[in-house]
Length: 360
Image 1 (tube, rainbow, N blue to C red):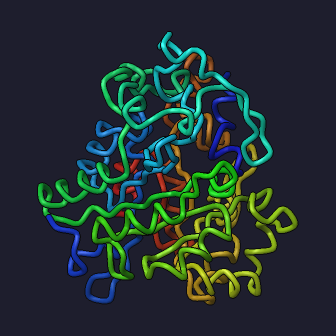
Image 2 (cartoon, rainbow, N blue to C red; image 1 turned 60 degrees about the vertical axis):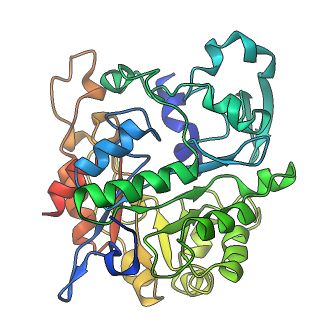
């Protein structure tokens, strides 16, 4: 997805311990197996970033769960896809918060809604999560109202408890959302991220954690403050919000990747940067995985989704005349297998069970 896609494109278009000995690198006896990262949990089947989604992802065999991190008015890291929470909580139906509706510019995009930085943690906790894409995922929307918004500490505690329950390490893969914006309003996220890593015994290169971001500066800042593994996210279009003169395309050339390796351990590219597709079919893989590996970076592409809406025509399945055709599942296994064949070190998926099955 482009940076906009990770944030809003789809909605718009549709109007037990976690110690070093258990790091889920999936390298066993010299055989590498790509990790499966549950994108906001099993977010294709349960409202994203909830214990419902994370718990299902663990049961489906994921290796990491991903929490997107934004900041509250009183400085807490909470887990939402965006700091705008009108699309993922019931805040719009809460009359006591009606006056908090606002229009803001986030990374150059004008957004109207309710924003985490205007709420205390206690107020955020009074809200309930809901499905972000109810048109595509009505079965998930049936779980609306059943789950609270989580803090990052709560997600780490859950991962630790689940690791003990299932007998394998469940890592965490937090994303720092909009660091430049949060810094501009006096709520910088980087220091809070480092403190959270330290507080949760994740402040090491061997801890089961990757910290990801679409911006370069925050990763450089973290590189000086934590040995935890860092990942630069990149999209097929646009560039880092904190470096308006830089394009992501500049960062994924062989020379650009050498520069990325100075402050990051991995690259998180849009999946079509590895396996392109047109409207009809998947296309041959690019050299990006090979180039990133040559620079010493692991590669974890985002985001594999199963619905026909996200797939080229030859991979769509079901009755094309049905009203819910775009919401029906297509042959996403073909996408996953193509990414694995390209040599990726892991994949983000809204359907981690399918990613695990395709991995074999």
